[in-house]
Amino acid sequence: MRSSDFSYFLKFLDIPGVSFYSLQKEVSADDMTLLTQTSVIDLSDNLNDFADTAAVISQLDLVICVDTAVAHLAGALGKPVWILLSFMPDWRWLLTREDSPWYPTARLFRQSKPGDWDGVGDRIKVALQELIPTPTEAKSSSSAIAEIDVQFHIAKALQKQGNKAAAARYEQIIATSPNHAEAHTYLGYLKQENGQIAEAVSHYQQALATNPNLGKTNLYLGYALESQGRVAEAIDCYTKAIQLSPKSPDLRLRLAFALLLTGNFQHGFAEYESRWHTQELEQQYTNYPLWDGSDLQGKTILLHPEQGFGDAIHFIRYAPLVKQKGGKVMVACHQSLKRLFEKVAGVDNVVTNPQNLLDFQVQAPLLSLPRILGTTLENIPANIPYLAAPDDCKISLGSNNKLKVGIVWAGGPLHRKNHERSCKLSEFLKFLDVPGASFYSLQKDLSAGDLTLLNQQQIPNLSEHC
Image (cartoon, rainbow, N blue to C red; front, side, top):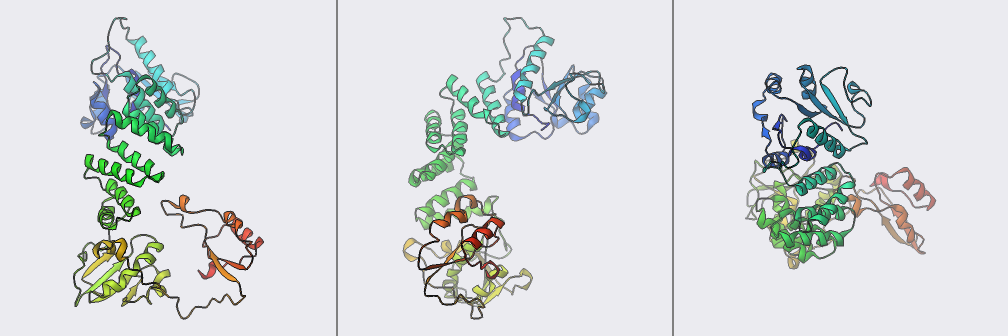
């Protein structure tokens, strides 16, 4: 709450007769890019401790900063300091006052409403102009950022804060400068987040009409087109984005998902290996060679899961094919899958504790097996069923001469798209009254509301057995 955004400082960096110096430590990449576009001198590399900072401040006429240690340091040194404060600041600055009894040389610039750094920046500019009388004919520094770009960076800052005023600010920029590609891109992103996909696509396309080499815009357009079901066009966008940023694993992963969606498994699963270079997954057992699909005679291979239970169940189907390569097949899995996987053809050992792993020579993540074994739409291993219920099953639903139907309406909450794939139990009510059918709940982690609804519908709850 107490930190501002460097974008708001751009409002007054073009005032003639003023030299600005950055005392900011740990400057972000975005802020550093902005700094290089201004005449501000970055001193961060010279500030090793507060003594260094004090030495710099002693040579300045004024310090402008947010509520941080530098504000106290400048005040303690008796230097004029203008402090930017949030709407409800720390108690040290009291309420409503523009001065500070703690630091006589301090002047306080408060937000007039929560989040209003925009207004604070405007008041700072006026105050500076009053401090440095400027002839009306004077021109701002040639190194100053253009006003339209100042407004753009402020709009980005508003967006970063989650302030809905960002969209209106982008629209104002576009009204003034219709070909401002970045404003179109960021406004498109906001439209897309708001579910206005068609408008988002329009803004992305206008941005790319001005500059087709915007990697982020190509990526966002791909997302939007894919959500409209226009996957082939989305693939073109992702491909263009990758051409612009060939070393980005995130772009390649996005492309992989789209390719797999179209059934292009060979190219899709090859690109899917990029997942290991993103922040989404951490590769395991990297001290062992990744299996390349060659014969396993005399070797033991470890097949291990990398994501959710569903993926483990989905791709354990490859165990028999791996077994055909010779050698022994050991599978690592969660305890809740152990009994199930022990009956899978081709599996020699199932281990749930890494400390109990037997000696093995090569390894493969389950979701890498389709690539390793050359899977296409035509040769998907579909020897169904490849799983079987354990013989010691203690659950009996009995016989009632009705169609027995199990229901599950929500996935695991940690899944990145769980809000898209899950629904509410109440939405199942549309078909729970179908005559001749008996329904059974297999849902785990039931809420109190779901339990009440199940009882009202007289649907047996089998969650304790699942």
